[in-house]
Image (cartoon, rainbow, N blue to C red; front, side, top):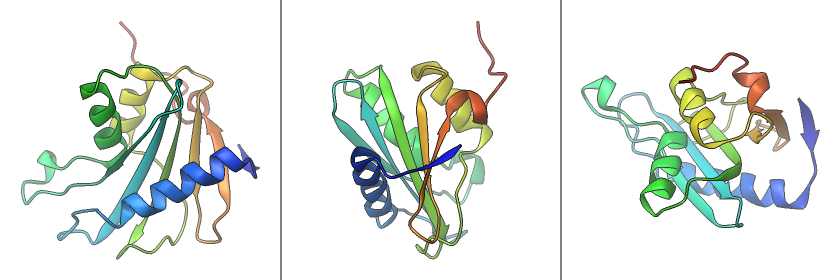
Length: 137
């Protein structure tokens, strides 16, 4: 893990913060946005979409990944994630275990996961740091 000041990382983090604004979170009030970068340089965004039946909820990370895959993309280089209560970033918002496993399907082990804190600092993790033992077939 390291703090990154890379211009591309900051731009992707800003896209994730904008995606937070589109979250549908009437139950938890916790808004999450994600911005995914393909190997070819295209960006897909996603937000969390809650449902009264909580298991039907979809996280921002999976929304962005599934949106990209549905458009024919399958190779990603990094993803930025921002989240917080009532749409305000209060701390780093780590991806859940399901999202980490989905990421392992489309990202390399050394792909970057960018997480934004309340000070607008962007932390860069490798997927293998967040999911050292993914399920593989």
